Image (cartoon, rainbow, N blue to C red; front, side, top):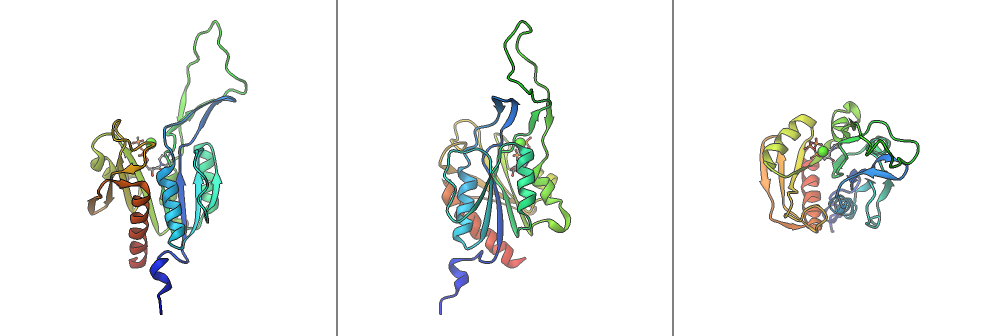
Length: 225
Ligand code: CTP
Ligand code: CA
């Protein structure tokens, strides 16, 4: 008889994925954000669902359709994303693919800022919560496998190693987002898988390909754990 686990290696597992950018308001009509398309995170959510997992995708604003068979929670700011992630726990595996804005505007104007004699406004920033680090250090609620991404424009592997240690995750998927690589917004990705004791570089491939290979790897890791 066919083993049901073969086609669905994540059957019975709960997977949480973050994706897309966050938007940090300046005033009621303006915001600060970044170029994340959400393609890689959405592809991971879809691949995990296809592998039989029960998947929650927490996503910032993207122009992608919600993946089929996935519970999708739409958020805007980093603080909203953290709240949605906490509400989606417990999970067996959490993959943090979102490009979370590192800073938000310290005091959001209640009304639209107007041009005037005072010249352009100065914006003061405060740091957003680190969603990945918060969940990786969550004690009893920590997912068994916590996976981060590292968007780097230089010293990709060294920076990823430092992030792995600093954030307390089990695996970092490091990608080179330097201008000219076409990673941000593009359909392909070159990634390095960084664990505390190994580095593996995967051939450049589609973001769907990276997602499927990553899901296969996570299923192996969780089966062994
Ligand atoms: N991340 C997060 N919450 C944040 C910032 C980052 O969850 N406020 C997560 C991202 O989803 C990613 C990982 O942390 O999985 C690394 O994000 P990255 O921006 O590369 O790292 P930072 O720690 O923000 O460092 P820097 O941007 O200064 O390189
Ligand atoms: Ca960052």
